[in-house]
Structures are given as structure tokens and as C-alpha cells.
Image (cartoon, rainbow, N blue to C red; front, side, top):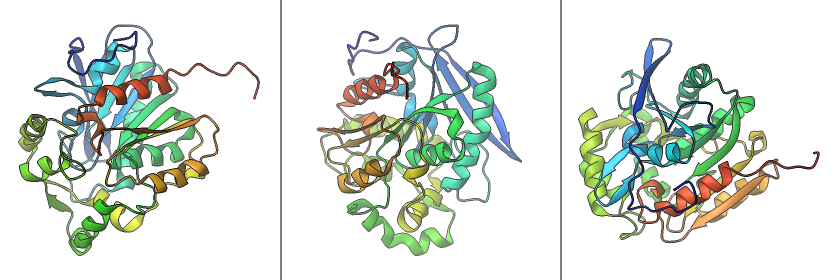
Length: 308
């Protein structure tokens, strides 16, 4: 795979996972690491979205091929990290709603661990959906720590998003409740709501099997932010090289909205990619190998040789 032969069916070599815990005040946060060997490697931090925790998002075992983004990028030579945000996965449960601002605090706590354990001074970041909002907001707050940033299924203002328009019908609930139902049917809907046929239905059930061990309730904070509080990221303050990736059929990340954000990014080292035959959940789609390819190409971009 390091030679660019991305194959979604071929399994990447299994990589032993390291598990860590960091504290954010009284909250314990679960952090995970995979790397394919010893020695210094570029650090890649993966940030999960609103409905699923870290390992089901980025280290899933499912029928039909490789679905572990962690395994793939560990084989490609990265030191790969991810975390369960507050109220997700193996992290602490609190009374909060785990909004984007809370997620940034989680990432600040985790970044201190990552830098200490890896010896790195910067890290690449890749966030999906509301995880992309968290990652971009972290890049605003800690600009010196982010090397290259990938925003997958991002949303800026929510303009022309049929999914967010429909979701906003539940705003009164999101404003008054810190948890929402996330059962098997809801997880299955992630795979069908945009464009049925872009992913394998068996993967939805594998994801549900993995996630529902943590219960059928997840926080409402990022849903509230995405329906009522956008924009939560100022593109003028995202100073690092940035790539935006959108699936052709994504019902949240409209092309017009993303291009508006893209045009306002100050760093000329930026890319905008639309992947055909893909929907919102790029990491679970039939064409996830194309996602791996463009992400790796951006993260491994050679440095400029001229002075600037």
C-alpha cells in the first residue's frame, strides 16, 4: 500500500493499539494510538463526528475489506492517534452536551499527551463531519500545533444542506436535552440518507454492533451547533495548509458552502476535492480507497523549495 496501491478489499497489516487516558479537569478521556514501527513518524490525529466514537469510526472491523483508517495510515508510515470525546466511547460521562467548544478542550488535553509521547512538535489532523468542526476550531486555538489539516464532510454555514434543514426541526429538543437517541436504525440511516448504494449495508450493522455497547444515547451538542450556531469556524483564522473533501452525494456539506469557506482560507497551500460515488460517511464507503489516496497525497506533499 505505501506505493500508492490503495485497495479497499486488501486488509492492511494488523497493528497493535496503545491505549491512554488523559484528564480534562474531572473528565477522563480515552486516547488511542497505532503505528507500524518504532522511530519518529509524522503524527496524524483523527477526530470523530457526532454519532460514533473513535474506534468504531476509525478502527472498525467489518465484512468486505479494510475499514480501519488507523491501520491504513499506520502502514503508510504515520503515527496515528484518535480519541473518544467527552460522553463518547470509553471517555467519562458528564452532564454536558459535548458541543464543539468542549471538543476543542478535549483535543487540547489530548495534544499534550501526543506531543509528549511522540516527541513531535506538530501534528496533522483529519476530522470528519462535526469532527472536522472540532479539528478546525482546534487549529484556530492552537495554530502552532497543526501541520496540515483535512476537513472531511465539513460544513461552514450549513447553507443548502437538506440534512441540516431536516435536523433543525428538532432544535427545541436539542436546546433542552443533552442526549439524543442513536439506535441501530439511526446508525443504518447514516449509510442510506444521502444516496443508497454508496456503501455496504453490512458495515452499518458492524458499526452498530460496535457502538451500541456504549448505549443508544449520544450527546446533542454538535447537532445543536450545526443547526443553530454555525459558523463556529472562522476560515481567516485557519492558518495551516488545509484540504476540504466532500462526497458527491453529501447531504450536509454543500459544495457552495464549502467553496465559500475555501475561498476565505488565507494559506495558498489548500485543496478542494469532490469524490464521485461517495456520500457523507467517506470512511465507510465503497470508494474509501480514493479518500485514503487524496488524504495521503495531501499529507505527504513535498515542502516548497523557494523562499516565502
